[in-house]
Length: 315
Ligand code: SAM
Ligand code: SF4
Image 1: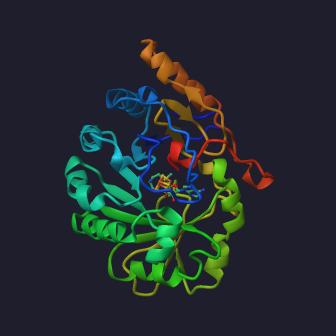
Image 2: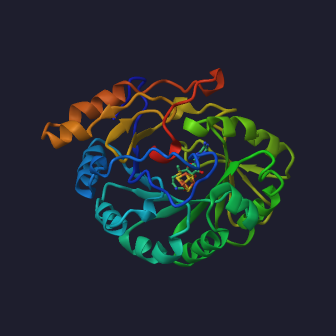
Image 3: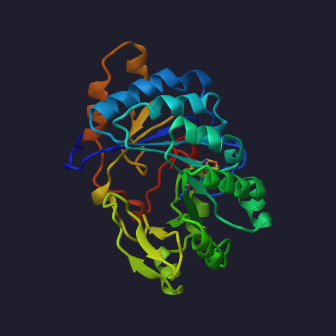
């Protein structure tokens, strides 16, 4: 699958729900959350069929996200079904980790290869304020997922004045276990875009004030710059969508929980595939249309930001 700029699209990110048990300040507004009507949410059968078409078109990397994917009923069976698709070489999930203690074992058994766990602070009080969730649940979830043999990346959104004094604690998480930590620049998105603008701090500011050894990234499709601490088992990554644009190597297509193909995270242009699918039409041409309208790059630095909230897209 090629987009209009000849970029190979081999990575599908599927949001299975817009609902979440957390309220991270940079992602969702605390109140007045706009919920998708339940009848508009794609069923697992629909999600499976769409994924299958993408895989036939060349996608070999699939990520399940949300909202919080682990709060949707039946998620383990869906992962299991995807786990049987041989052409998917990399089946991953992004989760806030709060239900991993309960589900990590089943996820591993169902065929999930990797989890990215979002964790922005190691301070319980800051965690509660930032997310409305409980840090203890997430830390226990990480331990269980690790013990079950899932490969783990911790995603930490950099937030000035909130967690920039905790960088060394995050770096130390890579010392004893083969767990990667990736620092991500916060992006202004949806109704909480102003929060991101206020708290932005660049990855380079952190790199230059810490003693990190640069290493090669063997995955050319990954936008992360990689580093290591001397003697550590895990690696440290920086993903800098704001200060170092990596759109030219973008290989992704997103599917929202209500059946919209979203060619770019930072553009409001979408292609509805749920309606034609439910009418029994062949949806391949809508997939082609989504490929053809994928923009060359985002325009965040020019001040543009999209209207939809991140929880409805999946990150
Ligand atoms: N609930 C799951 C979780 O938190 O991992 C999955 C969905 S969440 C929308 C996916 C990822 O997007 C998380 O790692 C989260 O930190 C990230 N994210 C959300 N809003 C963001 C923003 N404004 N800038 C950068 N990353 C953001
Ligand atoms: Fe929920 Fe994930 Fe958004 Fe936090 S980042 S509010 S956990 S969807």
